[in-house]
Image 1 (tube, rainbow, N blue to C red):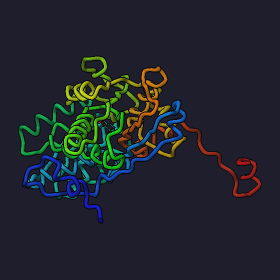
Image 2: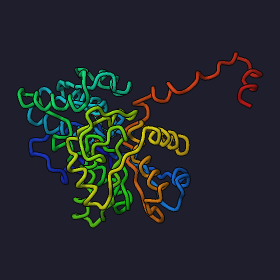
Image 3: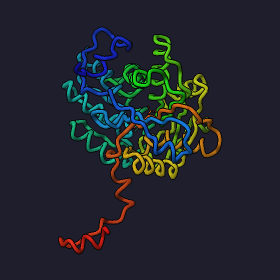
Length: 350
Ligand code: AN7
């Protein structure tokens, strides 16, 4: 059977208005990849799977929510959409808006957006505006603009974004036959953790798939949900989750509590180390923020605070490594240059 995108496959489980007109890039249906080498490196004795959301059409999980938000807007003949973004939402909004014949305006925090994301937003024809401030400042501005002008907001405050993003929980249950014991994922503006928890609960009510415990992980320099208060100047190498005032923070805390899970912080060093381990041990390259869930898991296991034995654990890797090539290339030396002679090559590689 051919795959026609998320709304076609799961639309009957999503609360979308009747006017919704599907705009799809065949997002979703991402692989759940087993990660036995990494599991072993973390101590072993449990099953580990990566939900590789970097394989969505624009390279991140945002496409799940964006197909829903843009499809709903398209059904209302919306001409212009707007979002604030640390980068991935911007690229996704621009792509789906392009396909729907809409204009996309994206506000990004100045100088803190990874190259692959900015390039995407521009390539898809989005109007990119840099704000001399943080993501949180930009989000406040797009909320006000969308109240004042006929411009639709496609940040995850938009409820249809959450509806679309629930589908990843459905897919995980469909693939495994039930919910995993634990789900680990990065937390920024907290839309995704909210969507996963809603999705798992809905599927459990329908199909008795069970519920996972949720481990949400923030970057230590941007960890308002761990600290219990907003962070005025969030900082982290994981720029995707450089967010100090998560819009759905309350719901994230609720998801952690109701699922008997928790929200913790991982340092930049831990995040980058995990990005490296995942790529080198499993051949899965994700952007720094996407390694945060796994970094948190590793930290909990190492601290003896996590009974992993016999468990089935899914880590959501939200964005592709190619989104942020600089983080890799700026730290490496130049590859060695050899003359075009076999003996010179042999000298270097043998
Ligand atoms: C790779 O693009 O907020 O907790 O503006 O790009 O739902 O915000 C991105 C967030 C995790 C956090 N991983 O998800 C944006 C933006 C990656 C991300 C998150 C983001 P939420």
